[in-house]
Length: 487
Image (cartoon, rainbow, N blue to C red; front, top):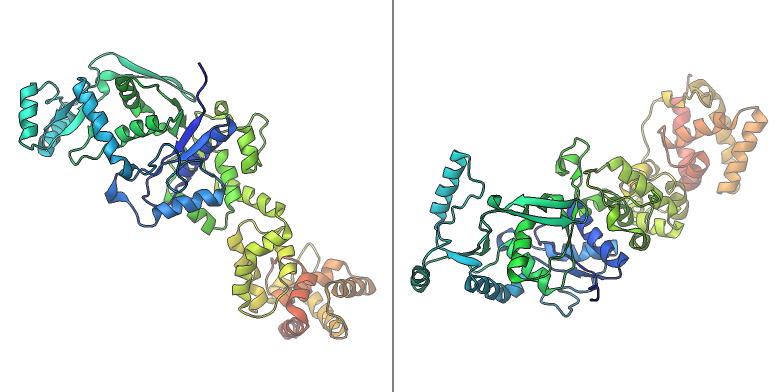
């Protein structure tokens, strides 16, 4: 018997942004398929029409493209197991449900909504019935069922669950899981409007698409027996289950918006690179054997293995994600980094000329999120008001009095400088410090404060002088001299 080709599927509902948890599920499905030489399928589950959000489907396609997860089959690329949109498969579900009814494995339930609510309320009040439905219609005589159907009475189709014993399945992460059948409700397969339930459609579609590995969150562990009893009812082979640990916030609660950005789109808007997000999310629940942290997507495809997935919940740490992001920024080619930040720089400088390459050079080692760029360079386009207290610095042993002594002489030297270029500015300031018997910092600090108006800047005095140019630099130095008068 030959081993079937590994096939995984990502089956999102177009109901909004792609949450971190959904993205990790998609990523692990992709990595399992690629690491085992299999196929990654995209299926859209849109049968819950009321929850659909306009534009969400395009967002799914966009996100997968942006992170580099290419699917082998799907609504947009086709394939031999289509259609890949659930609402286009509605004709497939009723025949399967009716097959189970004909085989005595399912039945029509005619209970009204009001009766079901009453039964559930009574069960909760008694505290001794886990299922919620009392199986009132399970053994209705065939003639009654036919008469009700002929009369057009609304009905759902429910599966007959075993009334005793246990259902056990093996999960690739959590091992053997057993559930008492008495805890399982006779689940609805087909609703009265003809739409399948989530569980039922999942099983039909996964079987029809030859899915071998079902990857999902550990919150679905308890409902997996329902899936398996359906597979058994049809006589189909049960897929391999891979349940993933929860993703928590630092407070130990399930990750949500109260912890910060939780969707891929929001994280990108917050200045994180798609590559860094994918790398970090890959490690939320999976650990490589050699404890390597930095991976490209291609490297993840090579290194990933199911046995590296943890049972324990993972904590989403924004500081750690920021570290990953900084590492990716540092590794970028300078031109690529400039391409990313150029729109923001253009916006800040609003048509005024600036040295984009030099700005990128001094920003790249310092930026940890792309959204920092605008604030980091704002002082270059707009003069800052500041106190002369900023001229004090213990490390460089400077204070306002030293600044008042040094800056006028520096200004005179700068005014005479024929070529306002980076190397010339460097040589002038270094030589000035040497000639005056000062440490470099005792010259650089006052100059940088005078031309920036702030304590922390990307780049030092020389880079800032170069970017600002002669006229703006001298104008800012003149303002500083006025501030220091009388000190």
